Length: 273
Image (cartoon, rainbow, N blue to C red):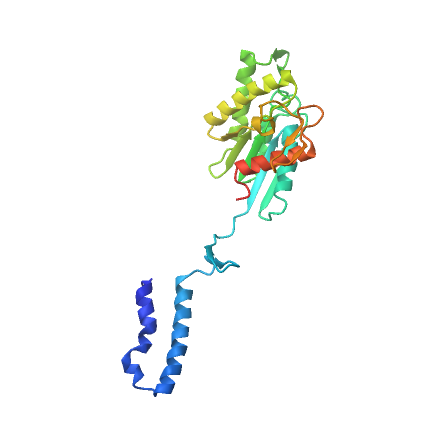
């Protein structure tokens, strides 16, 4: 491609003196005005892509980016992830290029594989679902023993920790692909003291295994805490308005709380940018 200066000079070459001798003064003036207009328009078309600039109402010009590529989000996890799915669906409902798929299931987790084997399920899901983004949220039901045939590995015991880490790693490896972003959302603050201690313990594990496997860990603990860092049933949401956020069990959320959970996660992963 020739430099713009050369193109411009070539376009305006029609105005050199040798052409001026061919017309009288009246014709010369008319032709000159027309040629100037044609050349200026042609130069602008050559130099500026049609998608690159947009004139604002105030007359300013801003640069536009190309349209966003379609994004598909797959959500895996337990009952909290079911609510997270509903929240993200509402957040993205006005965005045509975002689709959200639900694979989360209530009454499941990483402990009771006798009920539902999430490692095997993640492998099947990943093979058939090529979503750009995978979001996982587990742990709500995991403060219990891991059962293997006739043996039980009690919560936080050496055998429990070993098997729980293996299951975490197995799920992450099952969904991990070079062109896929994976996020693990930690457990939120809860109102039951025995649950709170256990959930903090699980969050430490989630963060360590996420880092070890090269995926992003997102902490949600402080999102729904009071200004003093304690549990609250109601408070300011993601939009700054006060509302009822938590369900009566002090673990799960109200529909409005799940909407805010979806807003927080969407912001963390830059889903709507």
